[in-house]
Image (cartoon, rainbow, N blue to C red; front, side, top):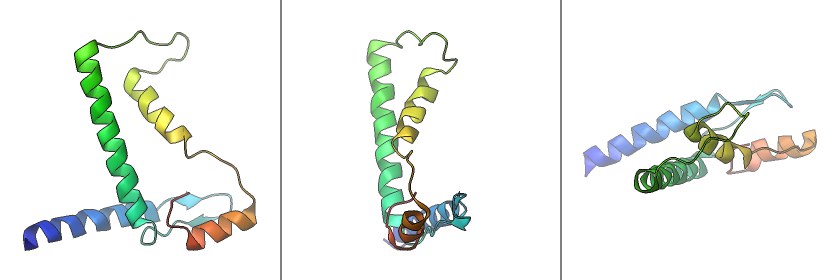
Length: 106
């Protein structure tokens, strides 16, 4: 219905705006949240479902022991692990190419 479509479009625009504020410091350029919108929505949806599954597992099995010396809780480690898949290094030329053409955020 129209209400559902409007609600989706508002949330999608929110993600476009949010991702467009991310700056790739290496080349001093901002992301284009419009061209990365579809993948950003998919990635965020996948993360949300993964976190729900993790929390469901914890409810059933209980929290595991914390890793000594790290100083991070279980939830923090979950999101840190997710964030690390996006870490990488690239040449400036590649960064420029990706920021202009890639449907994936950097």
